[in-house]
Image (cartoon, rainbow, N blue to C red):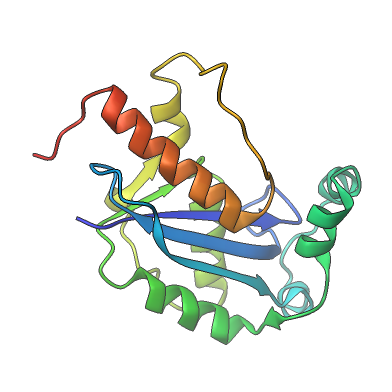
Amino acid sequence: MIHGMIDLETLSVNPDAVVLTIGAIKFDPYSDQLPHDPLYFKVDVDAQTALGRHVDENTLDWWSKQPKEIAEEALGEKDRVSLDDTIKKLNRWCVGIDVYWCQGPLFDYAILQNFYKNLNVPCPWNYWQVRDSRTLFNLLPPDPAEKREEKHNALADCDYQARKVQRYYRELNIKKF
């Protein structure tokens, strides 16, 4: 069974938010095998605003308070991918995934579903395939020794969250059924 973690960085918290970056990684929560098949790209912001996707002043203000290198990576114009290529890349990556994870499905998947709808393209997942890592992570007390290197990079967030899902599956003794 293939699991996939997806994370977005955006310019709003609304379902029609402009998507800055998409990160994704595949993993097996039942094993210690490292997450694999990473996907990361920056999405064309101008094309999204032309479609009427949302930019929020509070989110822009939040980005202005992030470390310079993180904000520049997310907000910089270099290497942006067209909306059509965004859908193609993400759909290709989704092939074979059985379970989709994120840190709050009312954020990442709500935005992606709205994005797909905006482009008149069906989503490559069904609602029943989506899992919330935040709920899983609240089942155990926080680990005071846990260190987090990089935040607000969509791929780094995915890798961190996928490894944490694996750790929680081990600690909670969750087995395949």
